[in-house]
Length: 153
Image 1 (cartoon, rainbow, N blue to C red):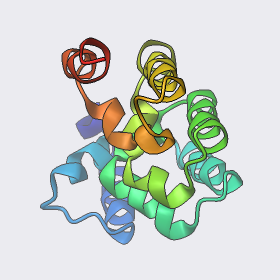
Image 2: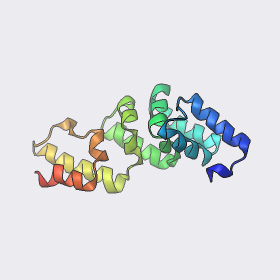
Image 3: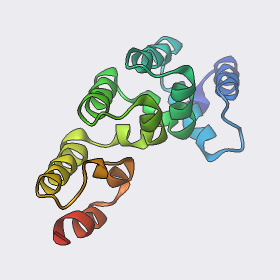
């Protein structure tokens, strides 16, 4: 799909990605090309605006885009839902969330909320501290999470 675009559009996408600071030799470059090729400039700017609405600085948004360009392909609804959950409920700030932007692509219903519920139980029982809900928890496979936080306790 990406390579079917007109040459001018493709060149424009590549230029935009370079301007955003993604090096063409980076593995993320191709993901960024694919992300931008699948959406209009208007939609890309709308996603950028959603991040701003949640208090992200340009530096934080660029960090998200450079680490996880696929985050720009999320629907506005999924993006807002994820940002709201992590920032309002877990009290993560934009800088921390930009560091762990991969969590925005996780399923809220299948991964994020169940894991938070399990960790909250362990926090209430005094087994874990409140700061146990960190970005790395959502990057664990299901098996790793179960072994580390369910079976262990």
